[in-house]
Image 1 (cartoon, rainbow, N blue to C red):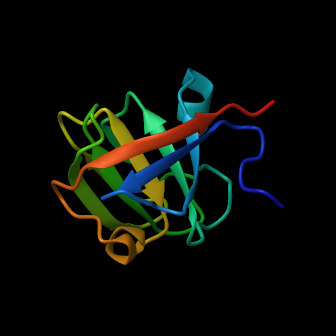
Image 2 (image 1 turned 90 degrees about the horizontal axis):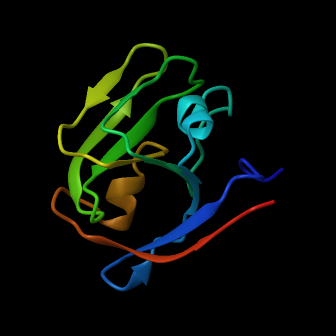
Image 3 (image 1 turned 120 degrees about the vertical axis):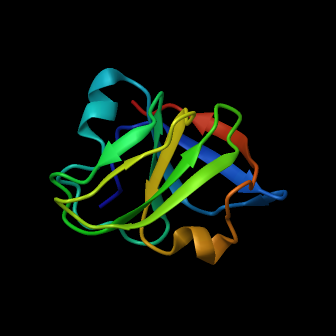
Length: 126
């Protein structure tokens, strides 16, 4: 089963290398409101990029997550990890995007505060 199959996708790279992560883009009010609630535990290789967002919670989550807060230009401002289900809140003033994925993904790909991501492509789903 595909991860959130009807949502648009975005591809990002770090230092010219694709992240290789299936990232779903949440731009609409409803998509941002729903987030990852009730999608099951996050697994490596999948993520959710939430637009126009500088705070998240883990109410309704089924497992811990990692949150990467990004500027409008996709520069890493903060990495919050692990955020436990049903009891975590994280805020980053100045953030425009939040990338939620499984715990440890940032370290696995070498992402740290100050890193600059670039958008490779974005695609719409039916």
